Length: 64
Image (cartoon, rainbow, N blue to C red; front, top):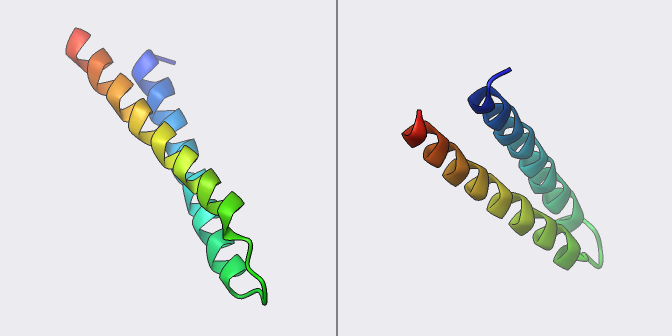
């Protein structure tokens, strides 16, 4: 597996995790006393990770 394939895999994996976080946030808003802080923090971290992976991918692509 090439480096770009690995980066694409990690990006897709994190995008899937981000979608799960979105579903968790939606589900949590249905609760009587929603505790959104932890879920939103997880979403933010995942979103940041995806952006970082895209930046790394663009740097790698420039080098190829």
